[in-house]
Amino acid sequence: MTLVDTALADRQRQGRPIRVALVGAGFIGRAIAWQVMQTPGMRLVSITARRPRQAEDALRAGGVDDVAAASSVADLERAIAAGTPAVTDDPTLPGQTGAVDAVVEATSSVEFGAHTALAALEGGKHLLLVNADLDALLGPILKTYADRAGVIVTGVGGEEHGLAMDLVRYVRAIGLRPVLAGNIKGFLDRYRTPETQRAFAESIGQRPEMVTSFADGTKLSMETTILANATGFGVSRRGMVGLECEHVREVLDLYPVERLLEGGLVDFTVGAEPGSGAFVVAYGDDPKKRPYLAHFKLGEGPLHLFYQQHHLPNFEAPLTVARAVLFGDATVTPLGPPACEVVAVAKRDLAAGETLDGIGGFATYGAIENAATARADDLLPIALSEGARLEVDIRKDQPIAFGDVDGLPVGLAARLYAEQRERFTPAA
Image: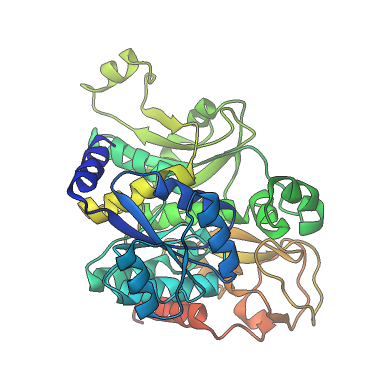
């Protein structure tokens, strides 16, 4: 990060800070706001939230006394010119002004986030997606829009998929071949619900649905899908294997080398030390390199493990923005067509007539699936499932197909997903 630090320090000395518009003022959003405000060479110019009072509270908690309300582009530009952070409930405003360099989407709403993202990209703003649900669903089509506009769309460096992608790039740079990458996860129970997670959620100031999506593996599937789309890797089975071991070092023995060499995979460890972070397994068969890898404690090979034991998304969000704005570098962004998707799977036996409650709910969990399989079976993404009504009975742990439901959403996210499918579906 030396180049980023130096470049930001230069921007600070020149009085040309990167102007950041944040969308989302929840648990992570407000933490990102405070981090941006403390980053030399960067300026938080606005916060968008569906409840503007929440955005105002985040600013005041960060030491801001004077806050402006913005309901139009003109309002926002006046506030920025005056050096006053603005709050608004309109996610499209930051994309419509030349006084913003980058937009950070940090909500957990796919529909609201889609409006933010499209407006930002169409307005020529670099876009940081902290919203993994949106990124996993629409990352490839958003990358198409970003390329057209000549800007960067990227996931956040401090999340597991960002950490893993940095490791993938490092491994490639030193002449090794990444063959397996993923998350170090402490716990997984696909049948957790907002009721089982309520007390814990309240204790840490988060919504039960959000905490449920962490516990039931949905967020894990979102993050590994983003990583898969950035690397072209797939999964060996729906939902991944989940490598149970005492320490992440043991993953070297849990996949046959031959299977990994067939094509890169994403997966995760569960219950393994160090309990958090991300890992990459690299393959190396160069006889000149192998003695040195062994000498420096990376083993005899041909598989070698690289991992990072922490993830700090809100701390690293400003650095991810800086990489995009100053160097045109996307930390983690789709290669092209989707490699994987996150499909809706029943948490319990579901009856025809029931209405699905989406991510972090009582009815379904999200499971990563190879995109080719998801499309061949016409499987429903969990990020588009909320409000859909079942027309057939679905067994526990059975994936739900588009043909199994009625009343699907018709908003911007659904339209962009349809555009993504059409763009990346091979011609017959």
